[in-house]
Image (cartoon, rainbow, N blue to C red; front, side):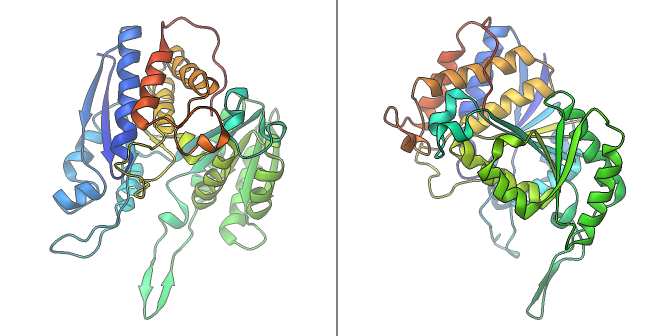
Length: 364
């Protein structure tokens, strides 16, 4: 047995895209002689309907007992029969906290094989290759107090020096494996939390003389991501800014459905596509499973230390896209008629072929 994986299909298109991701994982098992123990659990709106909570105790126990967690998507606010409305997203925040995964990694790349899926000119986005390193356990999503009282709503942004330092060190260590450039994103001209963020990231930068470092205001970064995306290598952000900027950056390669992510830092890695539940297309068989499939690749690479297998998945996705196949979210870019969620999974499995292949192309 090569390891244990907890699969949480979740809500909306989550079960649909994870079905294809699991098919790709099964193909990798067959091609490379691996065997993973797959356990399925409950999370999100469907867990609220069954257990009254988005992250049931049984799922919590399973999550800390496996090597990796593979998540589809969670969403749809639910009102249990005997209780107030519950937001399924609360379960995701609790899961990240339970696993101690403070670093959320979101790679965005536009190699030649996916240039055609971008709404931008090919010469503008070709060669984009950046990673957003998002702090995932602090900031406004976890800050207290928060609430709505007497017509006034309030949330609290809180960061400690230690939280900022550890995510900054993660970003600089990652940059050493890439193009050795870190850009830290903040709003230090307005927010006290960003003043501290800028000071601590600057101190950490002083320990990495081999890494080019700069700080940038988040509003400027939002503009620069679109106007000059190739300037970025590793983007270091707080929780909320990273959430927003990674969704913006998805347009560079054509669709949010293309992006994988990994939440690491604890003993158990959490892997999930960046996209949400997409309730408007759930059940129609047209969701893009590429983000989920590439999340499996990140899981194989980061948790199970199987880079060859991870690269094979990236190669297979690149080959399918290069041949002109795409789901409906990418079809406007041209090529063949759009394929379904299941057809895209079948194409990727077919493109895996034999395990020995040339060096992989960069993947989106």
